[in-house]
Image (cartoon, rainbow, N blue to C red; front, side, top):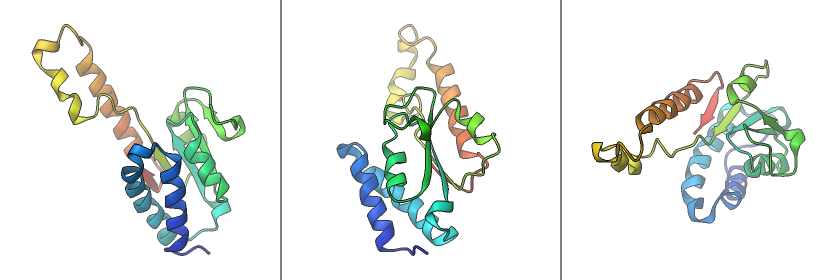
Amino acid sequence: MPQCGRKTLDLNIILMRATNPRKAMKCGIYHTRVLVAVYSFFMKQKSDFKIIIACEESQTICIAFRKLGFEAFSCDLLPCSGGHPEWHYQQDIFEVLNNGTKWDLMIAHPECTRLTCTANKWYKPEYAERFPNIHTEREQAIEFFMKIANANVPLIAI
């Protein structure tokens, strides 16, 4: 069975390479935490570990996990662009989570446009005409984020 250490480092390096190079360190930090939890807590065989990657149409992370022997699937409202439609759910993530499959890990990439602190400038009253629905959009984004965070999956990385 895999142990913490070299296997975790190998998978972390693959995930860092699979993401945007400018954001590689940031993504690597988050994935390291997830992978340490995966390897140390569950200690399952890789082929028994079911992973869902939410809000990912590119299948970059899904393919990285598949190359390492994990049973991984991507999920997005858009069709996949990674070339493996057999590993992709083109539907709402919550429909997939409620279809009876027991997922061990969910990695989610929700749209962050309305969740970031850098967007706070646009919430001032002087921008109300320019962005009339911005407050409603933020509330919807927060609701979506919290539904992902509270999903019935043992390990969740957002």
